[in-house]
Amino acid sequence: MAVRSALFIVMERAARKAGRGLARDFGEVEHLQVSLKGPGDFVSNADRRAEAVLREELARARPGYGFLMEEGGEIAGDGVHRWVIDPLDGTTNFLHAIPHFAISIALERGPDIVAGLIYNPIQDELYWTEKGHGAFLNDRRLRVSNRSDLGHALVGTGIPHHARGDHPTYLRTLAAVMGRSAGVRRAGAAALDLAYVAAGRLDGFWEYGLSLWDIAAGTLMVKEAGGFVEDIDGRPAPLKTGNVLATNGHFLGPLGRLLRTAVKDGAKDVSRPSS
Image 1 (cartoon, rainbow, N blue to C red):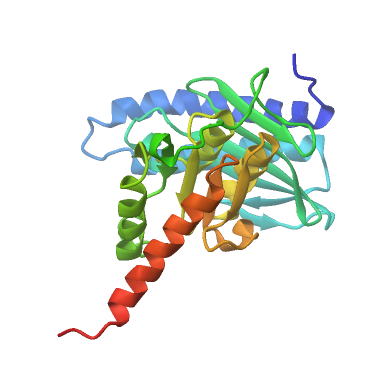
Image 2: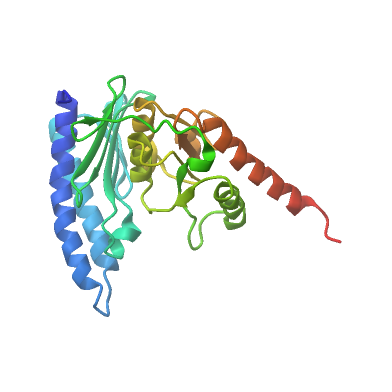
């Protein structure tokens, strides 16, 4: 059985309490699907309630720590420690009564992410990690997959939606990966996509324009499970750019080159004068 530190116990207690609320609210959302008003306002309230629970529980256990939250913004703390929280990653799934969403909590200490937790309350899957101590799903140690043939790889992604992202550029990267891999999956919750890479369920994942609270916990989890994370452009700072490529040990180079080539070739097409 994995040894749980005092820090992890604090994070787990907060996540499970917020998760119980989300699970109850999710049951209500399923009923709201048939109403004329729709569940949009209800889901926003569920998101805020979960964040309030997380903040209350974490602040009680670690007074003085700061917060960066998707809904509540930034709250200053001791200048060293900061909780980075997404209370409901996969909001659109939740809105449509699809049971694939998660709570994501990470802890920054200075410039480093030192702990992360991703919890799917519907499946009761708790992914967690501490820097230097590995990554786990409940009590099972996680390792990234060992596949080395890109033609056998299953790759996750996030698709830009209405009024967000560079759709033509993304479609070029999607076409490139589709043509070389065993399949591409878009599940709708980046935190869980990264957890799935850590668990070996996905061999890689890429997405543009993510926020820190989407990826802080998951990127540490992938690394602690033996994987690699970088900016899609090949730079080592995905937490700053939000353009994330996460893979096992075999695909970082091949997938990165594939994505960058697709973007570069598209830029050439745009700059080429029409006949």
